[in-house]
Image (cartoon, rainbow, N blue to C red; front, side):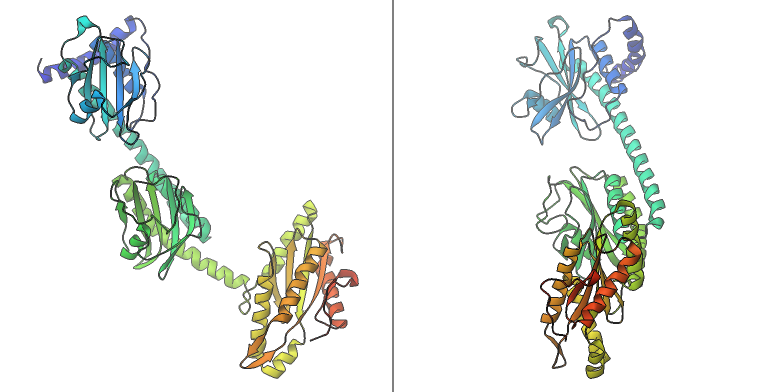
Length: 509
């Protein structure tokens, strides 16, 4: 029969097959896929396999897919009987038939078949996936493999249509994600939160296994957001050290297809990923001609042009918003920080104290407060000048910052006074931290233009609920303890209600 006549007969047979199926004994439905195939497994494909079974008269049809990574040829689904087990690629005649795109009779019959004659027919899909159909037939129906070629072509057409449907669904999902991300960008004002949102959106757009967003400063990249299987936040890389760095250096996107990734790491040296990707895309985040960062995504297989285009479309808007977020962050930092010492200022301390006080009022969580005052600070200004006074303030601020835990909050109240709030801390621990600051300050060897400046601090410590019952009395209680330290000789730590800290050092400075 000529091929055109066969195809015409197949089209007519589609209608006849569904009509006949209602009158036939109900056959076994195709078994569930052994693993996720490259196409959408739908009722259309199930119906197509059943129709092929009806038209061929075979006892069982199996749809196989070659998996060269696992070195297996895997049965995706079967009709007429249950699926056989996966077969090794090595030496199996199915492998040869799929690779050569040739129909053949399997002789002798494979061990997984219970029929005397088995025919293998390639399924020539347009996306290059290697599928093959096997027909197990009774001896009286056996003829030549070519009689099943038309069914292979028909099933390939169904698979191609399903693959196109999958691509349409994926494009729709990417478009929805792109629109949602573009809408969300103007509302993101924190650089870290914005970057995390961008990393997540990029991973969805590319359908990746991992992604990062990094800021670029001079010759160094710093990962500030990650998603999936990716290097952690804080990982750094320099120019020419990774595929991502090459995209920054070129100020242009790079796409690595399967087989083109070299020996360079994806993002940073010594990165560790659970599974080595086969493809990646890195898109610089540019504002004008300036590269301020980069977004990179990778996946176990190739990256479609549509997905890459979506990410490249998103990048300029994300870059602009990221720069705005960084600038806003810098402004916020200036508003919250003391310009001289780098500690928080009085305004930000008041806000933090209010939040901690509200937490105590609701949950009764304890916290402590320390107030420090630089001893004889006026004499430093009078003797060495105000520049020296600023130098001393900076050094004391460094000691305070370096003596605290990550959860603690330090601020400059004004002049030579500093305050430290210690969440979840009782009085004894507060005294310990205050004593640590006092000791380190006294041990500093401050050299100001060849002149040594001896500096010490006095401190008052209070805690709630140990020392005071209400939060509005805590600051006043610590301030009273501070003045007790100053009255009794300075360079010492005093606890609230006049109790002196153990291990203090007297002798005013």
